[in-house]
Image (tube, rainbow, N blue to C red; front, side, top):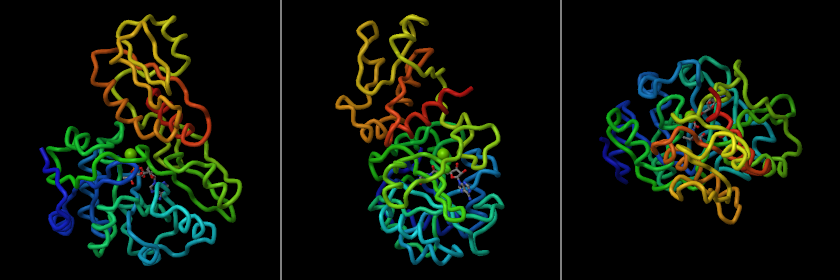
Length: 318
Ligand code: TXA
Ligand code: MG
């Protein structure tokens, strides 16, 4: 088991020795390494069992530092940074040579984010290197939104988990790139497309799931719990499959034929932000029950509902 604590000096010392810690962000917990050390970054891939073709996000604490390791920040990116950083937005920029190839899996662009979590921002201020950090889960599993989630799955492989409590956004960052004058969404996430479009106008989206991903975050089955997830109208699924060995995820419905503790309503008031914040915890919880199926109803296809639907689809993919 790892130590779960709030000691920034301990955290900084471990990172400076090219070892890993878990860090809280407002989206999900990250498995962090000194991004300028290829040795430390290699440990991230090894610890997560992550394929080396899947590049990592660099986390830093202000725009000046971003400028140190990327070539150019397009005007639209600057606007988005002003509006949404620190926050659940990751942007792709052409990297400078100082960013090791292992971080970007050999790609010319590097993914960058300023996370919005006070303790992690303090840590980043203290360090003279950015942190490369994927979500702190074994590859292919649901991302952790609590320090205990990290401890359960990676606690025997890392020494320290910086404790930032529960993640407020609860779903990974939205990833965007810039192509000519276009903003392209690479991954739906904790910042809605609507919010981005308010600042930069209409955006393009890459197809949400594919077996030949441009960005490995688009791998079809990427957030999968162990149970079989079926997406659809839950009443219809209950008719088809019966109500034995079933758990449900809905926005705010209940099903009298099922035990209360097999049902998760993500937001009784129908708030999609609250729903996103509880999604991964719900998947983990249902995964721990002695059930066979998780029935999930699609959320309204707007705001964070789109990102939730995207994660549900991936959880349901074989
Ligand atoms: O909210 C988040 O983004 C969390 C927290 C810890 O910051 N991080 C996270 O990292 O979700 P990860 O590694 O689980 O997902 C990052 C995604 C990957 O799917 C990767 O394909 C994509 O970002 N990515 C990273 N660098 C890229 C690049 N240069 N080009 C295209 N996609 C990239
Ligand atoms: Mg991940």
